[in-house]
Length: 363
Image (tube, rainbow, N blue to C red; front, side, top):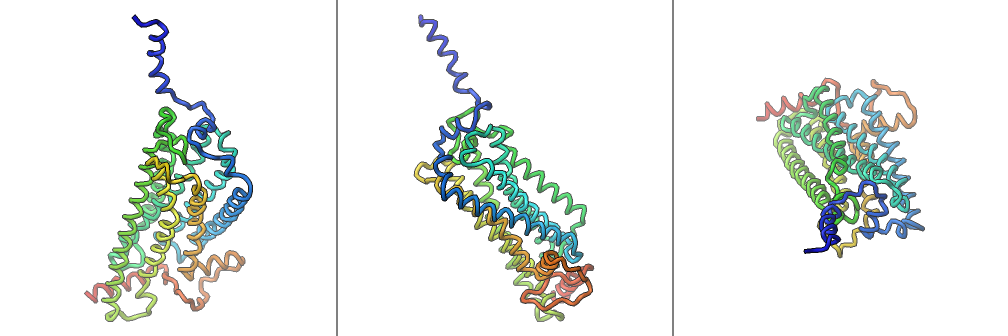
C-alpha cells in the first residue's frame, strides 16, 4: 500500500491544476508571460510615447467634439448618414478616454494593478474598437439602402437610427466585457497570452480573426457599392440634367465612407495581426517590441477621422470653422465655392429625389 502522504499529494494535485488566481496582482501574470513592463517603459521611449499619446488624445477630444456639435447644430446634417457619422465620432472620443486610462495604468504601474482594474483597462480599448467597427457596419447598411436607389440619403427614421446607435453601444460594451465574464486564463495559467497576460490565447485568436474578417467583408461590400454607383452614374449622366454636384452626390458620400474605412483598416490591422500571432503562441515574432507603436497607430485612426470629414465635406469644414471662430451660423448666406462641393442641398432631400427620378427616366 502507498504511504498516506502520497495519497494526500495525489488527492491535492487536481485542485492545484484547477486553481484560480483572482486575488493575485498583475505582477504574478506579467512575470509568467515574460513581459518587460519596467525596463522598456522608462527613459526616452516612455517620454515619446506619453507625449505623442497625450497630443493625440487632446486632438481627439477637441476635433470629435466639433464633429458631434456640428451635426447637432447644422440642420443640413440632420440625416441618418450624419447621425451615424456623429456616433462614429463619439466612438473615437471614447477611444481617447480609453487611451488616457491606459496611459495612467501602464508601464511600471501595470504590475501593481488588480485583475479587475486590468480588465477595465483592456475592456475600454476593446469596446472602443468594437464601437467603431459596429458603426462602420451600420453605415454600410445605410449606404446600401440609399445607393441601391441612387439616393443621397436613406429613409431610415430617427427612431430606427436611435435604436441602431443603442445596439452599437450594447454590442461594444458586451464585447469589452467578454474576458471579464469568463473567457480568460485566470483558472488555466498555461493558456495565458504574452501581450495580454490574463487573456486566453484562444480569445485573442477569436478576437483578431473576427475583426479581420469583418474588415474584409466591409471592404468587399463597399467596393461593390462603389462600382455599382459609379456604373449607374456613368450610364445615367447623359440623361440627367442639372448640376454636376447633384449627379455625383452619392459618389461623394461613398468616397468619404471608403476613405474612413480605409484609414480604419490600415490603422487597426497591424495590431490585430500582432494579437493573432500572440494567440498562435509565436515565439519568434517579438510581439513585445512593437506592441506600443501599433497601439499608437490604432489611436491615430481616431485622429484622422475628423480630418477626413472636414476635408471631404465643405459644409462640415465650414461649420467646424465657424464653431472654432465663434462666428454666427447664417443659414441664408451664400456658400463660397469649394474644391469639393457639399453633398447636401436641402432639408427636403430634393437632390435625392432628383436622382431617384432620373434613375426612373434613364431606365
